[in-house]
Length: 247
Ligand SMILES: [Fe+2]
Image 1 (cartoon, rainbow, N blue to C red):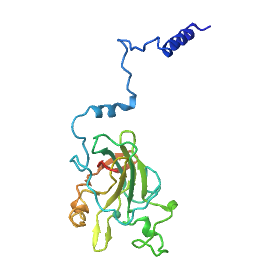
Image 2 (image 1 turned 135 degrees about the vertical axis):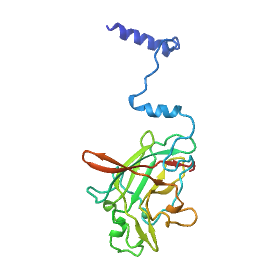
Image 3 (image 1 turned 60 degrees about the vertical axis):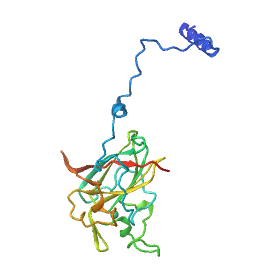
Image 4 (image 1 turned 45 degrees about the vertical axis):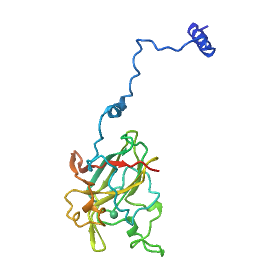
């Protein structure tokens, strides 16, 4: 007979009948944090507003136009472009925050879509075969989606994707500067539709839609840096989002 097992069994029966009391020894050590949670723990102790880039101010992220090229049901991937897509390699990383709680939002869903290095969307490279054609093309079949993904933020609200820097393109009389479209969803928060732009783009100043929209009116202009590796180099940028409370 295992004596320890008997002891445990008696103790359990005592607890079950109310004869025992659960107490924590005075010298019991605190439960150790898991090794990968330190940044999150330090964040919870932080005072003041979280830092968000490139907007800087703590407010719900500036909204921008949807444009004609969003498509529902994009694949969940961490890489926007297909393999070996021509263009300058770009990695964008950021964090999604709740404006209400000032905490990062885990499992927020982002739609990210963009033009290619020639300034074209996958819509435009599909033949017009239906009367509901949009801007010179039609939505491709899901299996043919290019340069559009969905992704989910991790337990600390972070996301990251690899892509290429999109080219600027002409839209009517206007030249749209290089940009990447975003749509963000999280439970308990309003849907956000916006775009990121690139510092130094000469087309930014002329890109305006009304008083508040377009690159000329946007604080969401990222400054990329070049990162060198033994295998080549890539551009890196940060783009954080803050979602307003809502349905
Ligand atoms: Fe666009």
